[in-house]
Image (cartoon, rainbow, N blue to C red):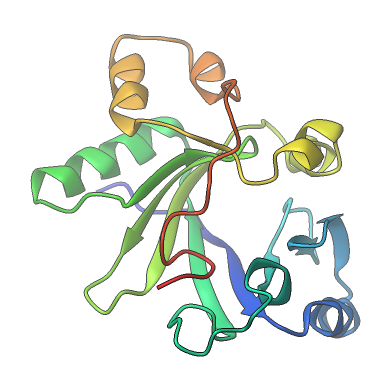
Length: 191
């Protein structure tokens, strides 16, 4: 089995967006690498982001208490694989036993596949699209990321096919064109 090389980041849902950003900057001496009214990405080391915050007040301004995912808390934990081959092998292994991702997406900075465990906890398996963490940070601070901080929905089977066909990894990891992906139901907010 290909194992992730590290826990990459954790994403929190919050209604105290600015307060949370400030607190994590103070406690972790973290730097904000990207922030808009909906999401912020921070890091305390060379990683492009270790902590992210989803602003529930911007995503769900009514604060509907009946939406089970609109409560503050952990949104998901992400795990990084060493390379695209390891991510593809993990996807194939899980698919063969009936476990499929609910959201395959190209975030620009990563290619990611999101899964839910039996209790509904969400996690992300990802591979970085840049050779260095510095290049990833530069991308988070770019106009391209500002224009599309979520990414583009993909069919991960296309990634698998391209990988097995010998398409260069750099080409597969390149951000595809397309409209910004909507957050899937239950991811970030929603029922």
